[in-house]
Image 1 (spheres, rainbow, N blue to C red):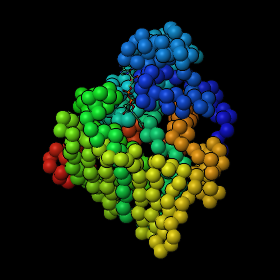
Image 2 (image 1 turned 90 degrees about the vertical axis):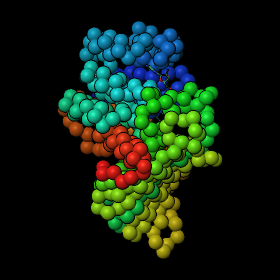
Image 3 (image 1 turned 30 degrees about the vertical axis):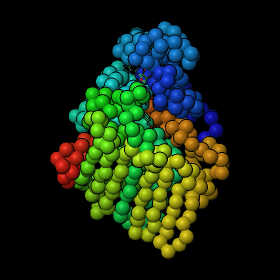
Image 4 (image 1 turned 180 degrees about the vertical axis):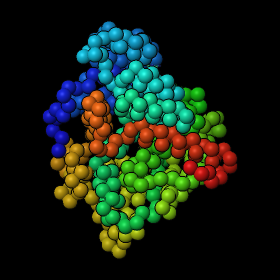
Length: 387
Ligand code: NAD
């Protein structure tokens, strides 16, 4: 049970790049990082507009002289401060096209990073970031935020304990409906997502498909893709990137997987689900009902496992913040991840490795590779490509 007691020697001195006023994702980063006193927000380059960013930072309680006009100035000025005072970690919550440059600069400056997905655009860039992080002993957490829900850990333990039998099928989907018309004409946050220069080589595969992909990789620890086939389409003809994609994957060991990523699934909010089908039973998790995990044993009535239940595996209860029956949500899941990032960072500072999983730089790189392979397959006319 998490109850707010400190787990670190000191809260990690933390800065943000992006996540400014009006951004979609900035607040959940701050809420999650600050929740358990894991981090202390001391600096930032919060906005593409420096004045607005400074004003916003001051409103968040950051000292005016540490609200910087851009990330390069921030890294340069922070490096001049004493080691006991300067930032130790930076969250990168800017549009995708900046992730690589900012993450690289943060690591080169010797700071830990928390980076939004996708980590970058190409496997070459991802390999460079992996090498930088590993060689410098720095942590890069990637905010595949849904993975912090505890029933994901329960599914992982069920797979590891053989409760489902041999894993045969994994069905992933994240098909939301909100972009079923050309919303990008009036919505700035939608607009950059359709622009290859800012969003990368894909829209829905990277923006939403990588979420259930990481969930599946977490639930099924030996998830390894051997080959895949992908077809994409833009149903809104003015879009340069796909707004719908279907992927089929052959996994090492014989299992098969599918992923449906979409922005035009009319009527659906998120629709994000991961279903793991084994030879004995299946589990299914749905992000709009994150406190429940469906457990279906062949020939028996469906069971609904509830977060906090005494029957769950202990590691799936370790991050309870309140007893079962009370709903926990995405903010709690993100807090769990940020807490893990913080513990991993403190361990790394002492030259130790984390003995628990979290979405790290390798998970980020895997998402980049998956998008790249899906785009390659789709561009070749939906052919099978080796992974
Ligand atoms: P947004 O457009 O709503 O906000 C982007 C923010 O970044 C704004 O405050 C903007 O001023 C700032 N910014 C842009 N360029 C900057 C620069 N050069 N320096 C400093 N600040 C800059 O975007 P968003 O929806 O919040 O998405 C941001 C990132 O978060 C994207 O990579 C997106 O893929 C990701 N995201 C992740 C999740 C998740 O579940 N993990 C959910 C939504 C978005």
